[in-house]
Length: 223
Image (cartoon, rainbow, N blue to C red; front, side, top):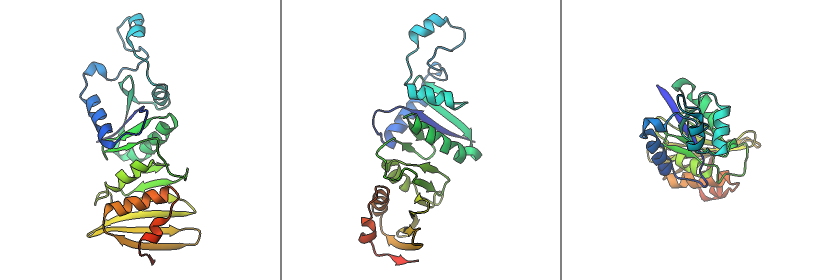
């Protein structure tokens, strides 16, 4: 089995539904729409015609494809990265970071999640980690909320971590969600139960943006 990630430029943040629509349209495009870089490198054609017909790719997409060997052009503006399933976690982290560096969004069709460039939290080194192996440094706020909604027996937790300082994590329970917060500096772990996903999403957003209202809003016990 293989694992895929699609990368392209968007001028503003998009929803996971919009990203999936774009990806499916590319997937169902005609064969001649796929696999040809926008630099006029297709075989068997007059290079002068290629220069006239080939549209310019967004510079960040070209930079991304140049720096990641094996990336496939889905269109002049969209690149697909495919890897073996056992290397998915390793390659995904590399792709997420490079896409951000090149000013691009990244769509993960397996999880149905889109990685936007903004808005982001206040901790540049903050990592989001999930029970199904995803690791993202500096996730955008929409991705955080969307990822929490994917928790399941196959993805049993989501955590935001600022190593050496603090973290927040959550896992689904039969009647709601377990929510934990640790102050690593003071070595104190707190746990509570919340009834719905919205409460978890609010807590994670507040944590990512440097707010701590969720600590006052819920009843915590020291673990």
